[in-house]
Image (cartoon, rainbow over all chains, first blue to last red; front, side, top):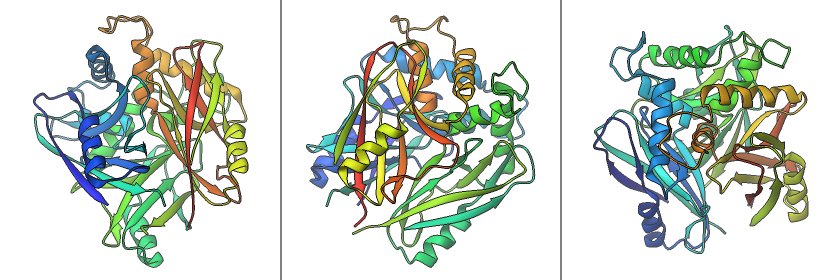
Length: 133
Length: 133
Length: 133
């Protein structure tokens, strides 16, 4: 089944923890074990899994990406967000997650982050949930 | 079910839009809703999802990757394509896509690109289609 | 079904070929065709698919990542492994693989590598195996 999560970013570059929102959707759907595909239908955003405990980690990831792919360069794309498109392809627009015991199976320190690279904006994340047979 | 798409690149670095080829395979297979795994069985190529409307976007992505990972450096691998292997791991060799209403579910601006990093060559992309129960 | 592979790294940065370990798990599970999700539940490690024949390739990938994301920079995260977190998000913590004829479907030169970025450590890789209907 398909479900949607709405995300609102407030900065140009921002990682937003959507782990609990996904767990709520899984709970409402009543899925005990299966798969959850997290899909970002945007070309200047992405989704990654990384440390959720210390927010300095996702700031470091954002800073590293901006150092490697600066906003201002001699890009062909003239909308001022070529960097955001490039970051999107480097990080990727989907993640696959395992559902067990009615929740996402994540490592101790892992959280799922929506990666905004061209905010602030309203964004949508698509979830495809598949229950085990 | 497994299906294959043939891709022919004409440059060393080239992004080739395979969205409609995938949609044709889905249509022929008669799958209305499910999952489509796009898998690249090559080590110097990749697959990404990014903007399909303005071709300058995928040129910017290729240029950024080449700036970060130049073809000529002191690589250990002596076949002249170490950069292509590195780009392949940065972008990734697979994408998962959702099928709904007989077509890929993509955002408004999204297209699926086969990423050639060591062309020109003939390449093959593997699709695994899984219909919902 | 969920299965686990144990990995022991002996260096800070190290790519470990886990292809045959995964094939053994598939064989023991008796799955002939389906899907295998490879999931790394760690935030300073990743999983990638790249050339298995020449070990210089994965050394080049590691060196390129270290050149782009050095261990020592002005990171906010104070545990000395911010670089490993960043590399983990660039490469990604999961791969999806196709199972056919009782084995992983890989290209001629492909192998599945567990990517250690903050070793040496004991690590675990989660596999979710789904047989075709």
